[in-house]
Length: 502
Image (cartoon, rainbow, N blue to C red; front, side, top):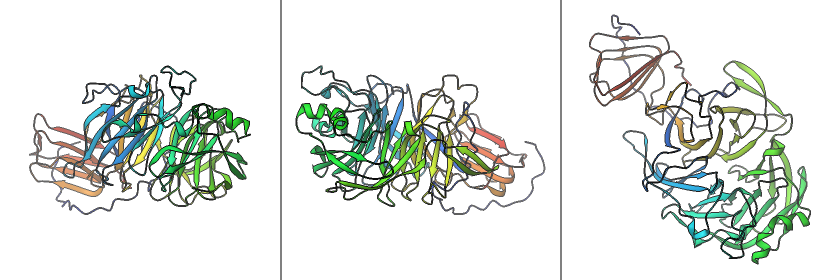
């Protein structure tokens, strides 16, 4: 920065079109360090960190996982955020969140821990789902044969439905009819009766469940997949009425010769083609298939590898040119945006967040890297607001040594990625951050809170009053001219370089 004679330029504020979240250039595939990397043109807000106190006096527990946004009346700016904690004994924390149309920032309130004592506790709440009727399903990744309350059901290894508005467990019981195994997640079909799910174990099996009534998952038929991973197969009906039968889902599947997968991490339904997609961590692949009929069908066709697979590499079109990168191991959480792009969160290799766009095939690949996560961590969760302007996700178990440098979130809060954190990510335009202009001249006083970015130069003559927060970013240079001042209590940050239109 330097003082100098002002150059007369007019900064004209223009309306901006918010591009889709999927519109970015792939990051360069580098190893983890102590920072979080997302593409130019995006920013994040921290909404919760491990150890923060909730409204009920409890602290957010460790190992943040599924991060489910539940809209209120289909709102993209008002809803509940549910965060799983994948540890023992397990936990789910829910808060009200609201996006302020004036400040263009999210706020949280009424945060509290779910009371699992009516269902003899919970454990390792890993991934989960938001149902079409806007409840949360949380999944227990550890299955045991212990029955501590003598109800003849195994204590753990179930899915549990939560009403986020009342913070209560639906029906005051676990969803026994979905079967007992290492639940990682599940997805509910838009018909509100059919559920697809998999066991996160090796062997792991793929299941289909058809509820007797819409929005009630507590009674129905449970099937397991028997067939090819490259071709076709069938849904075979399991015995699933008595407590003994529901406790023995895995042994029944094995006895029927069910197809074995090396750990099914996530199952999702594409909004574009209606196919069912599943991530199998131990096989480094995402498969997909077609169900002949979600309600009554017993046949599966076109089972195939969609992306990944052992030894698979892809060409990434980055700002440094084309780079060939291994798909790697550990594809874990999946999420579809409204356009039908598949986001793949990686627990293994370099722990990227990948985007597989709608044009992708294995013969003509189209993938890119959206996020590089901090050292020691994996990305988890990932859900979207209904308008697809916001993504909600978490960073689980980052290294406690990630404290050598800080990053600023969209609130200009200094963040070190050394503990579990939940983030809300959006394009700069959604946060009200102006895109880079050719040059900017700020002569008004006071200078309004906000981010001012120039792809060339930036000049300022004016006062930043308390408690305003102002960020300047110019690619070439800044001139802080006579008359520029910053009040005590205001926050001003300036940075030279890095402002690029995206």
